[in-house]
Length: 320
Image 1: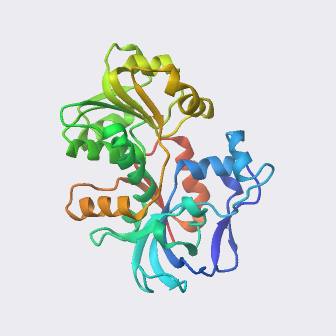
Image 2 (image 1 turned 30 degrees about the vertical axis):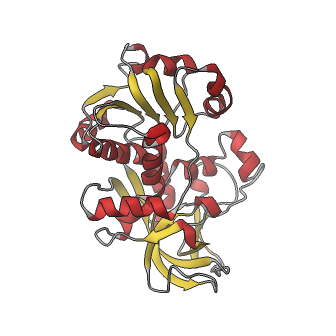
């Protein structure tokens, strides 16, 4: 089979289309013929090998996983002997990051628990834009009891996959939504349902004096004091992604240093149940995946370069 391979850390130019051995499913795995996948920040970090702390997990001097990609949408080609939920021919989607990577390829194997049936109303490309970003948004917004009607929510870094799903999900909850991102993205984010928009190049939301019931931060890198100042007493700060130093502060220091607010690192858990919750919303037309650009698999390096520029809104998708 063909797959996007990289053997060393570097720029997206290290990604090459190569012929590799087709995988075989283990007893509880399914083999998926990949129709589409999408790029996540994990993929960007894995290619660059940065931040360097990640290399302790994914290979100190060279990549442990030569094929990246966690979001997948495709057709079940074969199943292991203990698989009971799916059969060959089923159309599925999911986030395989919990069992490794490998979706930037014609075929990939993963545990059946990571997958759900693809929403019938969506194309493979649309389905591939959902799993990681959609589940992160869903899990983030229900942290510590979740966002409620009329509450004030701020989403920092709202223009990416997680943010565009979070806006739509929070709107269904009738929350009051403020978003922060580049000025060029703000009109579109307002059209998705944002009530207030902030261009981070012109305004620092942590110094505005405004406080929120929940802050969902995709790119956290400020001080704990900044975030505490932006939260109402009893408010919730949820870190979806950010700098390593910030993640460590939230995970190790915030629980005892910030008593009057709830600060936590979202421990992303890919699972079928949350995918099925999202599927029901897509089938009813309550949500829509936002796709900025679509690239064929053999142009994965170009797609990754575009992703790295940070100008995209929603998701960047690869078709296989």
